[in-house]
Image 1 (cartoon, rainbow, N blue to C red):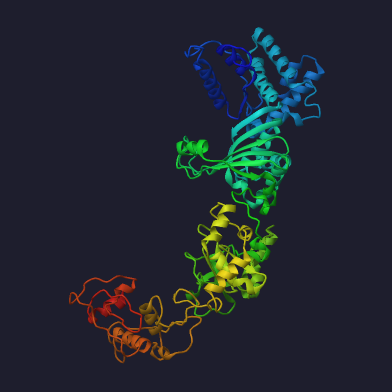
Image 2: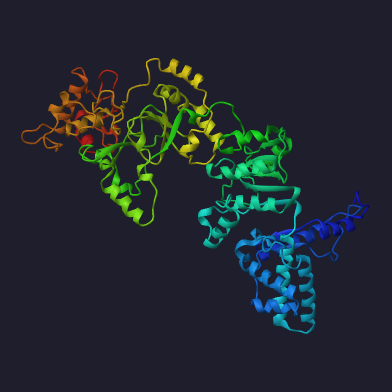
Length: 634
């Protein structure tokens, strides 16, 4: 209105006629979009602030890119009326839009021939419209139906062959594993760099539709900014386009979407190579809990500036919020993936399920719920020197075309020391003992063993998880990502020297569920349970001979009441506890009711005895000594 001296009505009509264009794969959404645009035009205020009101509008530039062809190719060719060029154009249009219902605006009419079609799209569209009017005048409904479809297809093709100053879209989200075969084949041929996700494919397609120096404004999932498998795409876009703005919107950015956690970014890309001094402007609105809060942050938060070229120097060209100049952990350590047997019920057991860990079974470490020195040490693996049943299974799968070596993953690290990282959620750490480890954890193995204390100090600190999450916000982090974080060796060596002046603790656990546990009640996290197990003759893998061995039942069967030749189980248990904790141990009940009528099944609180020896005591339910039989039976 200002620049061209137009009235509000004239300006609205000009915008609809010349400036706004839309493509939609769903015909119903195309109609909804056209109606919404018409409503906006009718409601636009005039010079007095009143709505312009209903009136005929110029034809809207909105087309359905997903409209399939109707009729046969010969039906379309007859629209040519003997014109060879027109016939060729209609035939190629028919062939191209055979796939439109699946591919929509991913189709690029400009790639059909070097000269587009032999006829230009605008000429082709105009010819179809004129022919359709003649058909309608002759009242030929069958040909008219085909003509209407051809008109719509030609219109969509004319829009898809153009270039635009601004492309604005919220891309469709569909990961590669859910693509149909026809879509997979098309993306492999036309979008090999971004094919793994329809969202990233549309980022590339949007840039193709931009004029030189045009802009793509796109809302897309944030994961492609840091996933390792998108490194090639990031490198391509950082090298060939100008990144103007990156707004991290996070989850909850859509007011009309519920039930889905869609973690997104808003990105502005300009179709021109970035200059060396180009800055990317960044704002983080992910902390907002709803669209209104996020919009306020976008408008008011200060912009952070980072040179675009710096992202080409990050690990895998990841677009991260903080760029470090430190060396990476991967320069000092190797990040290894754990083993996957593809049949854990057959090959992966808990150590207490077998009499002993031998006969082809090896110890295996797995995840831990909390960062601690030694944890996740409950499993065992049926390995058989890599040449037994598991190897046979993998050979059979290889014959079926399966070539993965995941069943041998991490074997090269056996016998070495390092740090195990649980790859999900909080990235909890424990010290790696050099045994097998499963696919739920990754091993960080220092190239120089002298660096292990510093690596452990770093990986067990909150700094490590924070650095990893800066690179990758997915729930499950890959082993390669774990070693692509900045690592200040000098700093963490100083931390390790202060915290571990005598070196890291030797492998040990007071938890009876770990194969590192040495089998003695004293110091155990569950002394009463351990005492009962010792009475029954159970032995832990690392258990050494001791005085309690003589008190173990010979056949592993302990009678609760007294039987011929055997005292009650409660008396025998007291004897084990006295031998373990010393003769000064007391079994006096705590003050309370003389007889308790309830016991807790499967819990150490079921015992009525108070174990007082050294610094170790077992919980008591306050029952009398007589009720120890009931508790032990439970």
